[in-house]
Length: 252
Image 1 (tube, one colour):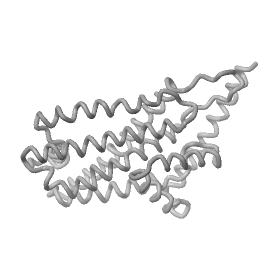
Image 2 (cartoon, one colour):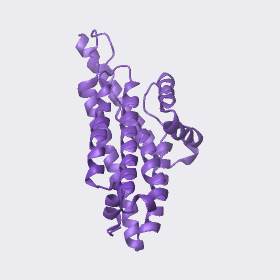
Image 3 (cartoon, rainbow, N blue to C red):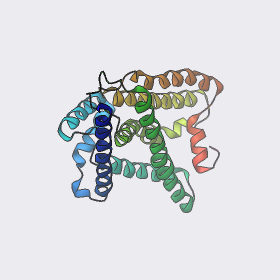
Image 4 (cartoon, rainbow, N blue to C red):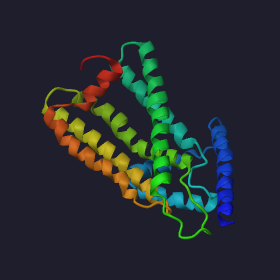
């Protein structure tokens, strides 16, 4: 009898998430329903005090009974900022309008949308399959990580990386793509900090969920990044030159 009740609760929870996702998609085209000011507040604090953002996530759970944002403003603004940044790179390094359009579309479609869905889905599956605490008894309602919340965590983690690898990198690119040891050193350090901060914010996003355990797993990639960084520096690999050559097919 008790397992039957748990399955009913689980299925009712799943049915609640489907209308939430459809409502989320409908609000993407409705600017008047988006909280733009709060979104920029989140973006600022993700770069300066990310724990404050996830403290507000707890308040959101208490008031809306869901961990995920019900406002798509963060995704929409990230897409617009990413478009502007990519256009700026195209203006500086591309010589073909047609290729520039291809670069903008590929960055938005593959790097932001598809890669984001893939990474969020991997974290969503991992946390629900392996990191959830076992319920102490059958009377406890089963809690699971919402897929939309996994997307929120990825977008939150991505924004500071965007600031470092798109905005700061753009203004530093004349120095970073130059030949010599200093450009190699600075470029690798910038990529190392950006990747490490991404994984740190990933950790904060899942660590705030009270029904997850062993969330320090999300910090392990930082160790790999720190180990790889000096190896790449000593080998003379310059990530700035590498990625700009891929995007714009020209030798810098």
